[in-house]
Length: 546
Ligand SMILES: [Zn+2]
Image 1 (cartoon, rainbow, N blue to C red):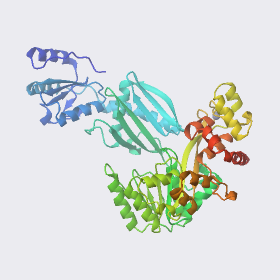
Image 2 (image 1 turned 180 degrees about the horizontal axis):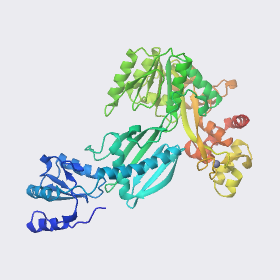
Image 3 (image 1 turned 120 degrees about the horizontal axis):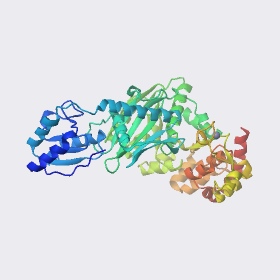
Image 4 (image 1 turned 180 degrees about the vertical axis):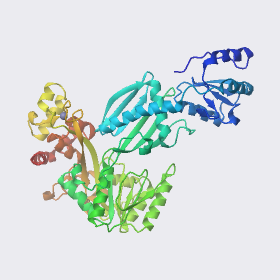
């Protein structure tokens, strides 16, 4: 903890003497070869003490070098900084008085200590297959939470100061922008196996540091697990039979755009990766795949994966990569995300000229992908051609509830563990008795807090000309109706993601509360999609029958 110091006026002899008396047992951490390596040219400008007192030469506070030093001090875990002005001579005197003393704090040893704790936390998180670790330094303690199967839970606390030091220690072994950077605000980095802190099943940890108030901050670490290399199984991710067939048909095509939408952690990277690897093997490795993403996330068989250092100029970097792709004779182009007008037109051009283009956009539904492309400057005429718009996929991930400890809906209702209105609506829609429906249980030795994994819920569309023309020329509502109308009544027989989610809730695989929270409201389904209810009941029975 920073030691309280009254503020002496260092421009007076009395003030300097008082300071020296007070500081007699302080530790100076700046100097050549010290914790804060300050070269000779800065020795008349700034002196840093471990308790957070920084003495700066008058008028030099705002020099970038001085600023950089105070930022570094913060990264070293010094929570409270107090700046004092003094004359150059006095600062040089401080170096003579304190500078020769051996550092009392062994930062390397301290780092090792903190890294041990950090490693323990990472191992614990990986054991539970957490996707993220959140470390938030608060005034009184450091809160440590992990996200497992989409849900946050606290796994422990550390002292406040230790948290800030752990964050420093994490960046000390991370690659990327290190602790010596002058960027006082946000920091990013990545930790790999060579840090010695990761368990075997974790390939990489992506770090994002956000400074909060009062020199404290929050670190979020995203775990990237070692993927069982080059998996090709798409079907087992949770798609319905129809959706799996759609995806298989999309993989067979050698032209057109195949576009995924979904939030962060919607499983689209996994699906994209498996689809492309399956395609590569199905086509007996006789196709060439060119991928451009930032950061690189996909593990692709036989692909040229362009290294993109987008930095601040993502648009230019991706344009260059796309140009290179088109000159590299690819059959399939994978673009991390379509996010600018220029990329949109390049993507459409590629799709129209005999390439299959797989990518993602930000959209809230499969049909919404079309709207997003229009907003990104796509020509409506181009989007009317099903040879150009080959496939639209929207998906989410929902927790899989443990079959051993799940709770019957009737029991959850008695215990007031579920909203009565929601329970009734759920039973009514599915046409099942409350004793045959289930919600998340309390957890047992076969699961983690009632969950055993995650499963995809999705909507997939392989558009035909009529759908695209309706969407572009008439109205989105009409197009959606056409998509949802059963085949035998002249429609496309499609089903929205809410339908898929309700099938899984009805079959006791997903929790209705999560469906309602994550996908959509049951009210909406009941009001707007009531024509799908008989089909919902059949689909639940079919899923239960296996
Ligand atoms: Zn269980």
